[in-house]
Length: 272
Length: 367
Ligand SMILES: Nc1ncnc2c1ncn2[C@@H]1O[C@H](COP(=O)(O)OP(=O)(O)OP(=O)(O)O)[C@@H](O)[C@H]1O
Ligand SMILES: [Mg+2]
Image (cartoon, rainbow over all chains, first blue to last red; front, side, top):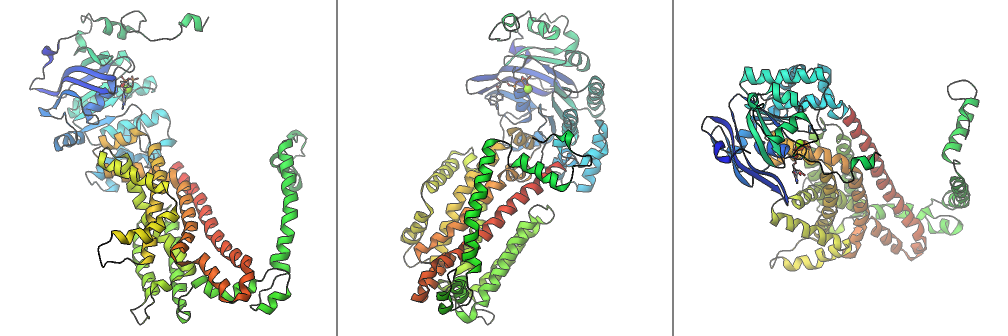
């Protein structure tokens, strides 16, 4: 593990997390997390199930207030929720939720341009055109604009979620499993789009993914969580010489290593 | 079961064959259902003919006691003779066109607003309709302006009173119940405790007690010299009571909306009230329509309990009519049957409306 002192937030870091901790009752979802992402760079977060990836992302967007530690965005402290600074940064952030969390009471286009209409007072006409453009960007045709989210396929819903996350042209883009459940062609298309957004708009992107190939080859930085702690973080180019057993096992998907599954009955007994 | 393959060609066979198939599938598909079907048919044969004989064939509508004494069936003449007393109670006889008109206005805006609920574009008219309608009704009922003579509300009675108590009750109980439901979910301990205590206390006592408290206890808490009208007290009691029940209904709906929806709203920079109004409530409301209408139906019927504080609602005016002349007293079955029919008409319409609304809103969801 990397000692926390090496990771003290630096001034030039756009997103800086220091010694972050978050518990839900007895569950320590996050402990002593420190990492940083420079402006305009991309980072992939990997880690086994229940490692705390989604909780970390919800802390970054301001849904959960950290119990301990600090989160700084562009030098501004956003560790406490409910204040103006936090609200300002939430508005500059776009987020895709793991389960999309589309609003079933609204049509697809209203979902996408929701905050543009409600917070930035865009006219409905303009917003709808904008939504149709965004739908095109994620490979959906304009006809789907008037549908309800519940009428879409799983992959379509995910793409609507992505369109909603990028609708406001955010400075920070947080994506919780943007390509989970998408076919390889589509998933490639989405990753291209994410890379283009980072490059052309200078957006800082953090993506949670379970696809190790995507994590290694599509992102500049990597953070690996395990059991609420940060196992490794650094540029993806340095993965080879990381020498971290957790990371090695995660990347290879091997069943041998420090990451263990709590299985009740032994598999060979169950499937004898 | 009928073997489909043995049916003659054609879409579904002839209509008589379809009837046989339907009956077999729905009425005689198991020995238990067959017994139930036969039992029900027997019961209908046993009940219906005597009812028709009593209520129609052997009955009279003539509004005189002599005519009623001659027939073996129902004496609708009692209702006929006392119709205005039953419908309008002790409201001055010559002015009874006013409560009639007020009732028409009230039923009109009720139907208007219920009809507007499923259509997003029309919903904005609901509140203005009431804002105009309520003063009109108040002027008609009370008078004292525009050349109408003043009628004290202790003379109000009958169907208009029942309708006013229940619709004003609904209008105010709805938002109050919503606030209580939100309060109960609140993260602020004071608000949460207050809501829980309120809801549980009210739900723990019968309406009749609340009304009694409202009429006897409530004045004790008021400063010296301030009096609140009996009708208003009953109205407040009904609102407070219904709100507690609605709060629980709403809570069920709010809990059924996934937490992720709220988080997503939050992450988009929406305030609590914005998320509530735009995301959570539309979803929650759709879920709670059937139980909400259920609460309204029981509230509509519960308004009859205002008799205990001496108001003359529809049920009590029937009693008034029965006592108006000792000769009529024995025709109480007809009187109460008439009141029951009116209550049934309103409650059944509400139930049908709930079913329609549920279907309409589901259509919207699938669109
Ligand atoms: N709102 C919450 N209340 C209580 N516990 C929570 C909450 N959110 C997350 N947890 C707990 O925190 C831990 C980490 O959850 P998290 O959702 O971050 O996992 P994850 O890394 O995203 O896993 P996955 O890859 O399966 O999505 C889990 O043990 C989970 O049960
Ligand atoms: Mg997750």
